Length: 331
Image (tube, rainbow, N blue to C red; front, side):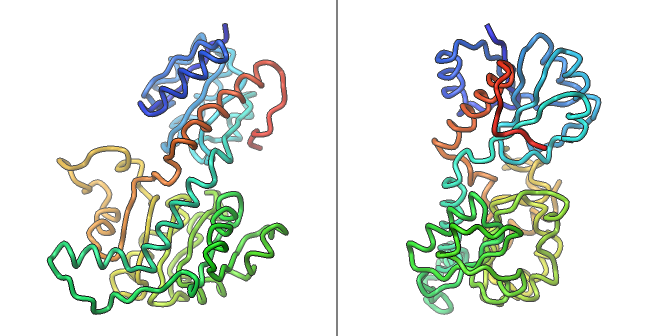
């Protein structure tokens, strides 16, 4: 029987894992530990490995250790693979795979919700109501069919968001290095500067890579309308957090809706009611602002997405071990 170890397993994944193991006659061991130099030995004796983590694997020797144990692949049940040194994994002879499209709609729907919150000035409404201020001053909203929404990164997720926005009658601008013909009836492709200047809300949907890190910085915020908002449901470092705080404090930018932010790996998916956010001062600053809403990297976190992340990743492991090709290899 094929034996697979899955790292960083959450309780909400267990039902899908057990169902897959039973259906495919697999032996699957789960651990809450992330893969690192101190936990790699747990993979000894297994045929396949699946991980999910935001912390970067802390020692490149881990990849050779996995290969020395007889493992042939390293599969992440996430779209992002920035936690893996792919070159080092390949050098060790490991095939790296991910799950690039576990549920584009999950993230797109979250972004759409946050776009509505910007247009409805939800952070200000919530802040005022908490203080028993029920006045209407400065709370007039913008209906979505009268708004211009900019999508940076119009791939699987951004393209799905464009379809949702088009159905609602919004004007949609898109910026991407690849212009998809299927989206051209729905969006107008423009350069980044034009998109930032004209959009009422900018929504980010790009992978984290050397070209996207710091993609939105001080010069970019200076182009945006002071009434505009930004939504980030991609990766935290896509926005320069230091550069974001200043325009939010000075009201040169109206709102930020952040499902992901630099430093989140020390904060998100944990309870900090006792110890607070002092370890990440930028996140603490953002948390204290009444024009910011932070969610703990849960845009992906839906019933369908969790099921697909488990099933697709385990299917890839099975295909690789059986010598079958996989469409999800990472180069």
